[in-house]
Amino acid sequence: MQNNPRITEQLEAWVKENKGHAVLGTTAQYIPALGKVDPGKLGICMIDEDGHYYCAGDTDTEFTLQSISKALTFVALSCHYGLDFVLERVDVEPTGEAFNSIVPFEIHRPNKPFNPFINAGAITISSLLPGRNAQKKFEFLKGFLEELLGHPIEIDKEVYDSEWATSHRNRALAYYLKEANFLELEVEEALDIYISQCAIKVSVKDLALLGLILAYDGYNPITKVKHFSEEIAQVTKVLMVTCGMYNSSGNFAAHVGIPAKSGVSGGIMAAVPPKLHSQTYEFRAGAGIGVYGPAIDVQGNSAAGTMMLRQISKEWDLSIF
Ligand code: DON
Image 1 (cartoon, rainbow, N blue to C red):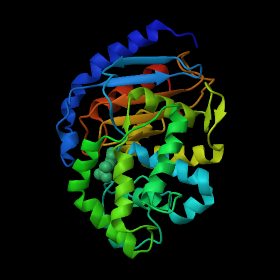
Image 2 (image 1 turned 180 degrees about the vertical axis):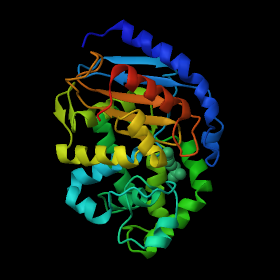
Image 3 (image 1 turned 60 degrees about the vertical axis):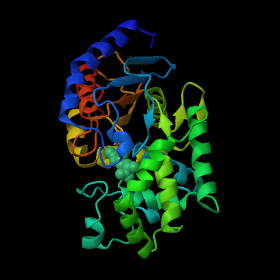
């Protein structure tokens, strides 16, 4: 696809139209450092298979991965130990409960966490990463992400400290996991990796690139590097569709129809697979999308970001369904 200025103009118009939907949400108050950011921001970046970026709105602000990191740790762990190893330890079933709920554990006493995108599954995955201690495990993840992104990454120390000091519920969850023998580390160590991965700083451009690699089944069409298998990419995208937007995943599938993963920072990473029979020409060969809109709804998804994706998907016929 040519680097078409009309696409960027169109995205600018949709950012303007959707910015107001931020009033439908608020910034994540339970992590004070996230709570205090400007709720009115909205930015988007899309990347096509030739490496052209189309960006609009507030695209300079960096933010933290939060739950988007859960999709990436799942990929990293599966790459190292194989998908079977991971799926023996974490299931792929939605829960219908909030991402940080303890209820499914108490009610069902499952023999593994329901899925890797709820906090219970994600903390379990973090503890299983290769490495003989928490530091080595995090270094493995950091190295994996830096290879995907092609640049160094850093932790936002303020967000890390803010979550560490207030993560009483995650600590409680981690104790459940420890009691059930799911964790391969002590509670505080597993939490350290989990909170670190959530505090990794990214831009909408980074999320777009990660989305593109997922859309292309683990292959980066720009650098021509194959990072992970089709099988891993497929299961990750299934999880993104069924659990990626938590209890809005059904609505998101119906109205947007793009595999996506959200975070309480207001970020969304979306993977648009190629669709040769699309009714429009925009992004027929697939795309990656990164969105940032820090006012989140009750389910934990960017309020304005979700509405904007709805419009984009409809106008450019991007739904996979
Ligand atoms: O554990 C938490 O609560 C946060 N660090 C991440 C939660 C999150 O991003 C859920 N997303 N929508």
